[in-house]
Figure 1: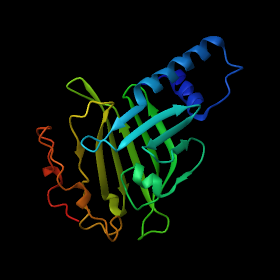
Figure 2 (figure 1 turned 180 degrees about the horizontal axis):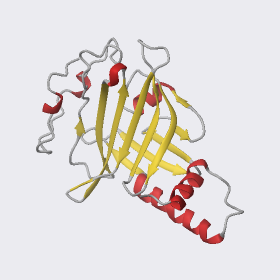
Figure 3 (figure 1 turned 180 degrees about the vertical axis):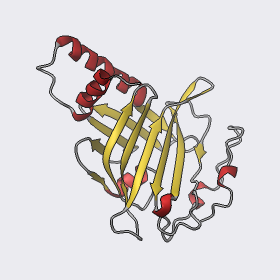
Figure 4 (figure 1 turned 60 degrees about the vertical axis):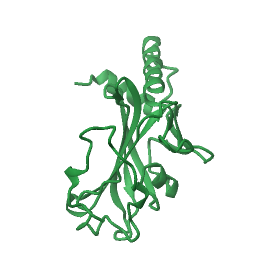
Length: 220
C-alpha cells in the first residue's frame, strides 16, 4: 500500500507546487523521486524497423513532453484539461482523432504513467472516455516502452491500440497490434475509415504466445 507521505510527495511533483517552504529533508526526498521519474519513465524510444519513428519522452517541472522526430512537442500538465488535438491522437495511437487529457497518474513502483481523458467521436459530440498507459517492461533484460491506449464506448465496449518501442538502439522487436475489442458491433466507438491496414505485415513471432486469438472475431 502506498504511504500517505509518498502520495503527498507525488502530488507536489505532479502539480509543480513550490517547495521553498518545505523542510530540507522533504525537498531532498522530492529531488530523489524526480530523479527516479527522469531515469525510469523518460528517454528516447524507436519503433523498430522504421528508424524514423523516434519518440522522445521528457519530464520537467511538472510537465510531460512527447516529441516525435522533426515534430512539435506535445505537452501535458496536471490541473486542467489539455486539448492536444490531432497531434494527441497520433501520439496515443488513434490517428485522425482528437485527444484531450484531463489527468494523469505516476506509479513509480510499477514504472508506468496512466493518462485519462476524452477521444473525439463522430457518433458523440462529447467524445468518448479515453485511457492510455505507458509502461517500461523488460524482455530478456532489454528495456522497452509499451503504450496501451483504449477508447471506451457505449456498454463498456473498447477499441484498443497497443505498440512497443525499443529504448535507444536496441532495435530487435516490434509489437504494433491495432486490436479492436468488440469493434464489429460497437458503432459508437468505430468511425468511418477506421481501418487497420497500417498494421498489416507486423509479425509477432518474436513473442511466442503473443497472438490475437483473445480477440478472435473482432473485425473492422
